[in-house]
Length: 310
Image (cartoon, rainbow, N blue to C red):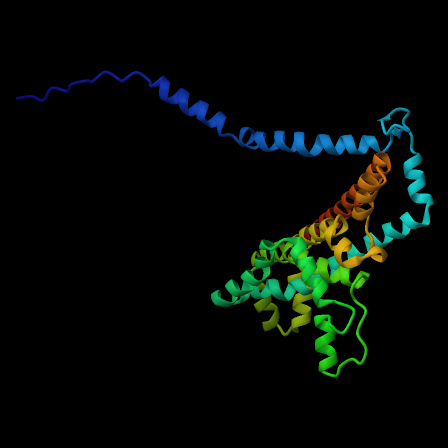
């Protein structure tokens, strides 16, 4: 008895399924997924920012209405008055010092996060991230109690009882207080990107350098530091941007003598009701932040080119 091959007809292509998959790929493409975020940023960030920058070159009449003619008088006024220049340089100085101190202190902490055991890593991560759950205002008032200028200030009380100082230190309502408070608040923004960059470094590179006789400081300068530059640049720009635009810390623990550009914007807009000049100060602050970010990325890009060429 011979076998008879039975040929089954080919099933027709399931166009509905393939069409649905194609539609699904289009709906869930990266461009479509990011579209809601772009619309949100356009409406609530870019358009108000453009409007604010437009105010900086407009004129406000006696009734408080803002309109034409366009003028650069607000920018000229800002750079001609000594008070505004002092506040500008104070903002840059405080932000740079805060960023540099955050970078110096973040390297050991980030190294422990990456190289430590699980228990140590969890504890350090909790210590670094936990303050983010507390309001900036609450932390600022806490630093008021710690840095109080009189003998009742916590720091002065401890130092005087230990016999380290005889007279109370004057820390509150100073640039030092603003730097300390800003460092405490923005320190996680340096640790997190830096620890991410350090985690990508192959430990065998450092171990090989030590095996060849390189001291620890040379291993850091020649291997760890260059390879961690992306995280350092990201953390530095984050801390500088946030510190330069800070308002609560200078207002609560900086006092009148340690004002920054963010405080001047609030004064011009809400107290003086001079929207064009407040917009001018805000635009200058945005320009400074963009300039620092551009310089940082330029330095990082140039270093990468040199590294690839060598």
